[in-house]
Image (tube, rainbow, N blue to C red):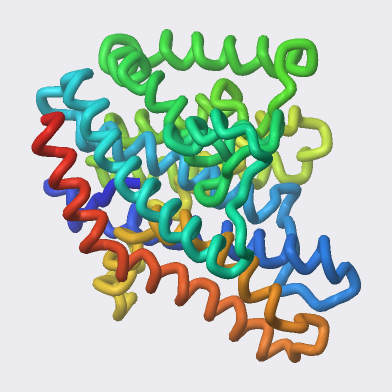
Length: 351
């Protein structure tokens, strides 16, 4: 979720669409969690939109965009003088200071409100929170999870594969894609005999999304013509797969839908950027999307606990969603100075 700012083909670092997609992805995830909270606790109450569109949940659409953007961002920052050691140090600094500070803040608030700390008394499990894998392992056991959900742990695991995928794309793109898709289908076909973790959260099953982001950065991002070609391909793929979604392997459909949607959004974002009057605001908010993501679920829980949702009007429901988004970004912006100081301290120690 690193920042990418670009404005033309010759200077892809100023492209606007990655920031737009990153922000839209965050909003789609928040909207999905908002509607799921209503669906689970007030099944007859009014929701904002639908839980899914064209056979894809809003959450899966948002996460697919996040995964593709992550592959694109990492490839973009690693195109010059890539070093495995430097890569992992930078990923450590990009994730852990924000994660730890968000965790501590939410933990303190949780303790003050509830009079006790989260967890099941098995104190060794706090190690899962320290390394950012607590949300990922919730499927297996209760632990000290507070922020980040499964996605943070998923990305930390996926980072381990990035150097191999990055070098693979540089050496032989087709062979790299062939190997990834073989793994994808072999694991997918035999999934329930191999894993217990929910299939959409398994890093092996999301490698095509991640690899697509890498490929898009290395071979498409820098060319307006190629972006337009991928826009057309994205539209064609959507037109083919949506009517056939019940006949396509769900995880394959999720990948094809995500890649096509991303290709369309990336190109359209660049085409309409001059019509958008708040480009600076979008880029500014996109910079905080990861930390806002860390906070948003607890803010959502807090507000739903103090508000009687079924009595709200439609306008009040939209306002509640707006407040959740606003508070999430406010929390991210307010904690930025502390995150920066902690990051600088750690950078001096490890870089």
